Image 1 (cartoon, rainbow, N blue to C red):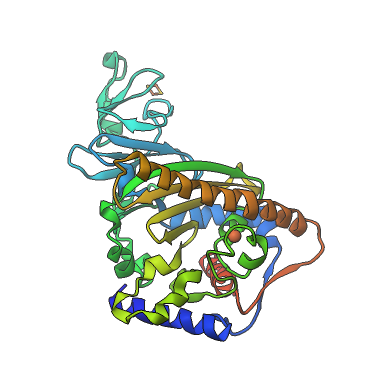
Image 2: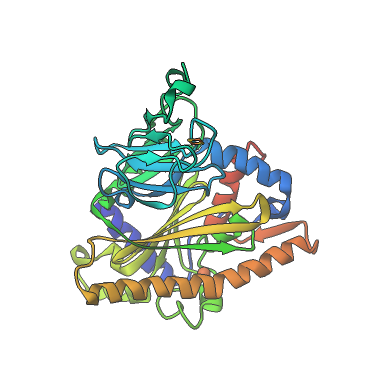
Amino acid sequence: MSRQDQVNLLKRLLHYVETRTTAMADSPWRNEVSAYTDAERLKEEQRVLFRKHPLVMGFGSDWPTPGSFSTDDYAGLPVLIVRGRDSKLRAFLNVCRHRGAKVAQGCGKARLFSCPYHAWTYDLAGQLMGIPDERCFPDVRGERASLVELPLCEKHGLVWVIPTADGSTDFDIDPWLGGLADELASFGFASWSFYDRREIPETMNWKIVVDTFNEGYHIGFLHRDSLRDILHGNVNDFEAFGLNHRLTFPRRKLERLKAEPEDSWDLMWNTTLVYSLFPNTVLLVQGDHVELARVFPRDGRTDRAVMDLGLYVPKAPSTEEERIHWDKNMQLVLDVVTGEDFPTGRSIQIGLTSGAQTHTVYGRNEPAMIHYHQSMRTALGLNV
Ligand code: FES
Ligand SMILES: [Fe+2]
């Protein structure tokens, strides 16, 4: 974001705080309850959103050096991501070309991948290197020379994969970002470090997990004992970028800026910036660090989800003091999200399933809720 855009955003927030108002949608919007409860809708989301859209897989620093690899099945497919000897990051279906076992487990560092079943081996670029007793497999190597590659893009410090093997190995994320590319690039995430990660399984629709981050209306109430003293409730700036958006929460200390010269105003220190990277990722820029929440449906059920929550920092900590500081930040987000937001999310899932109402309603003060769910209908080819 340009310096002037940062100052303008801070001025809008100061105005909202002073006038006790917030960014507003034109009118409330009613979303079908079935968006959260209907099994056919979930199948469609999995077919379209989790196969045809780029999904954030992490920061590039999750795979810091050649041989760094990770595996996960979150998107409903076994995915292996590995940085090659040429430093290029590649994604593969984690499926052995012999009989389909996972060739890599967990995450870490590898020189090659040896399938645990019959020890077919693959190099870091996915090429099939060795077949034990190859004389039993005449003419087989040529027809299956490598793991099946998925299109991957590493850009702006982040990594996206489109989880469909269509023969392509890369793509450009920028057209998907709806004008957010320069702003993402401006943070310089390429040089940031991974700090910590938690996998949090939940018993609610995956979109209720995402909705946690889509409005500040609840901050003064649900978070009265935690965030209310840090963030203003029900005051947000909102901007859409195609299917994505930025929601900005002013910190309470923002008002001190009025007594300071504009050229000293700092956006990150005075706000929490929440980027929704459609369809399932929320990037929270929290003053001095970033939290990345990737959310997926789980077990093919409308009422099961999993959140992969990562914490990233501008530079790897070198002292115990720094580690204590980042641990405290991780604990704060876990306390607030799993201790306050998610119990409410579980109750929402039960409420939506109860038949009490056919539609849920998002207010004018919840423009990001409206934009996110309307974007989803657009992506799914449904009427908005
Ligand atoms: S399934 Fe991998 S070597 Fe047999
Ligand atoms: Fe919350």
